[in-house]
Length: 183
Image (cartoon, rainbow, N blue to C red; front, side, top):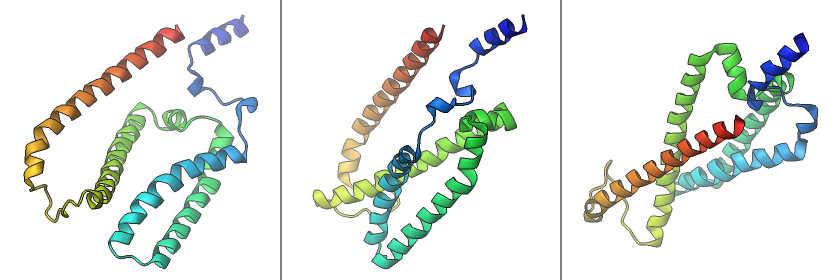
């Protein structure tokens, strides 16, 4: 009787909340691919270009990249990996287990703020690169002060608003679809 009850209890638990089985674990090649895709592609190449534009020496950038990547590898190897292998839970599930609902929400909002700032920085760096392509003068004040900005501002706001509505509509639809498929 207790086996039947425990099976029904597991039916209500999402797959993310269960430990990962041995047959779903990946090897070191998968880890290297994930690590390279996450860390090498974004920060080093986008923000590194900013350091060059601001006059940093090549050797300073290379030493900074080397130190940063060594620290990242050490933190993954010594902190993240042992925790993940021991618990085999996702970060969110583990955080929810040890700290509860409010800390998980706080962590999610901190991530929202951090990734918003990082995205804004990357957009700024990219727009600086595009500026050279189209021969646009450098923006030296804290806010845009060109006539082109004033002309296109309302168009941008409309476009951004429509994109935001489409994004949240698609996210809502995807959540409803997932819930319907799980039933």
